[in-house]
Length: 287
Length: 351
Image 1 (cartoon, helix red, strand yellow):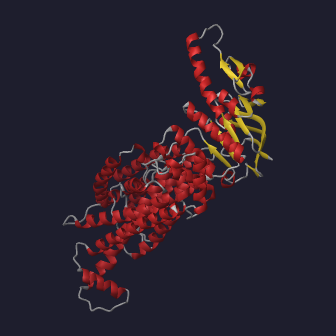
Image 2: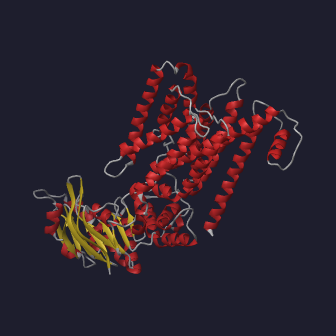
Image 3: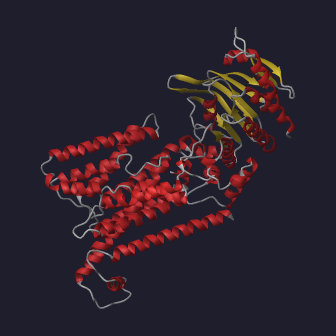
């Protein structure tokens, strides 16, 4: 089953092309990482798939809907989005924020019936934020807030979950925690996940399929070992890397090299290596 | 279980607030410059309801004062307060800005200009019991919002920031125009006091006919606002966040703006520009009861109504000769209370 399909989609902000003639589809149950430098079109692509930006050209189909004509309500009963950063202007409690995920299912005076509350409870349970109930959203830590927003997205009971750099601004433990959570949702509930990722090593570890974007075009699409090559990374990111193999899993592992003609502080390099390995090693022991 | 408890809490809170409103309206009906005893008032009411037929122990003029002057004014005050507080909730929620008030996108300046023009015009006109001043104030408020909305519209969208900016600029321009008219017009000089009273705000209801027009508008508006509650909650996520949870952002923004403006215009038409109510009441209620709009909207409406009823009672009784503009009372009570709440809560994000 196809989760979504976009055909010849282009999009511009003013006169600058953000995306050019993109063809892309994903099957249900896939976990896809979008990578590419800032401004390459990752966020724009996510906004097009979520339907909040209309495509200039081309069509996007999603679970039987053509996004060009679909109502927001219908779309958001199928697709949920975890944006990069969220600010709440007032002192909402965290469970009230999760309840906002039920918005596409509400009408009129309905405060959400027992079923809505049960779904909100399940969403908080599966993300592991139930114990935060009653706390003010704005008083939570960055990692907790990200999980609450994820719970809100799950309360929409989506078939497709879009995330824009879900691990940005988080400490490494929270980065790993969020990605483990996404993997579990993907494997246990068959949720289709598409996430823009800025950390290439985390992307390689958690996503079976990576799509690399450069200036609004897809330049590579496939398994991490096919996409994360030193030549592609040099071409797309302008960064010099050596691609090694992860010590414990069969995925590429990227080591950043100093730019030509410079030598990197050898002690800094030696000091950073073991800590990175320890962090990643910790993941594989978790089931 | 939790949901049921929450529902009960809402009901208890709302019943308490409505009780408080009823009590304040009763007090404002009993008290006044002209002393009428409570038992006389009770008897007059029972007679009106045709339940009893008490012998009048009061003067005929007392009955006129009670039913034709005081009671319409109390009801009018409640409607004005409910409308302004609800409009305040709508604008603060939509703009995600606790500093927003019902006048933020230019309704006040538009209404003031409309009222000034009406005072200059030599013609006397009445429509459904309304004189020219309330009518032009109402029209001025709505035209200004339309203009601001139109100016802020770029490429099929109306970004909130451009709306606030357009509102600010248009307000400034209309206020300047109003003062220009006042300065240039000789006719207005004798009536400068009325312009001044309009700007300071004061509940002026000239009978039941006006209320028969305003009441359905305000009550219907508050019910409609309550229907929009879950959408306003979603707008807390920002426009894009609201779209992610299924809100038709541009459509609902227009509906919320239109509703807030209609409520404000209705209030302005019978009360001039009463400040502070639309800003402080939603804010204070939010600090105490939380930002969830399902409770915030009806609770603010009840508190706002009671607030204006009490302020108006003070305005007409506190000095022995004449009366004070209500706007002065709302500011003098509202501001210190507000500061107290802010100091007590001290959560930066809480307001």
